[in-house]
Length: 132
Length: 132
Image (cartoon, rainbow over all chains, first blue to last red; front, side):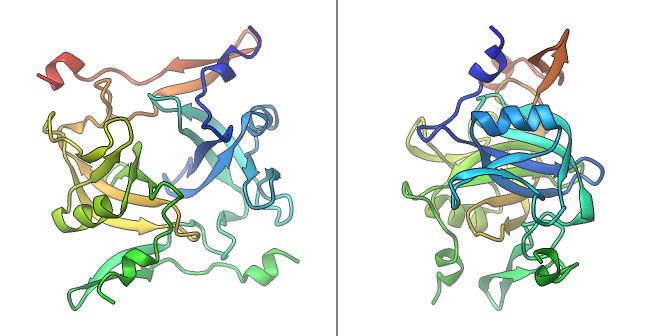
């Protein structure tokens, strides 16, 4: 019964579960990525966020290139056991590959009666400086 | 080009996108559900959260039975345009069908070296009293 905690998690048909990272200090929602069972186990062991990269089809230790790792303070599961939520400390203050604090920087604003997505969060660091 | 804002949203192969509801006042992550294009349009029009219920295969105006609607303050989209985030005022203070404020009430705690999911948020209202 070593892994009974893992068996309670409902991975989808692809063996994946969405994971939200929330800044533990500010409450800001930083990003959403995906985990498989191995990623979730490694996240627990390392106490740093490890995701499954769907585009690269491999484990992705967040910050492995940029140094912007996510130190995990809490791991939560929702009522249906099909979404993970991490409370994290975001090293470097930047979660998004665009150089912004959060990936959720596009807000739906209605301009002259027409909805449009507008970028409302500043770029903190040039992405070219993040990924050298 | 009336719906260009909608065409920028990346729905998955099933025509769905995950949507996070965050309490606009407290920053608490309340729940994650799914939207199709119609649900997202209705959410914008009503300024109340409308999701797509995968189990019932129909639009789900959150709170339609319980009265616990979510008044939408902001609609956000992430960098990959494949996750929606709503800033909401949760009427009644309860988002979860279990009678809790948030669906993310299970925390992974390590007890005697063994990880286990423990419920760490109180039931505010008996679910039997929510759905009469």
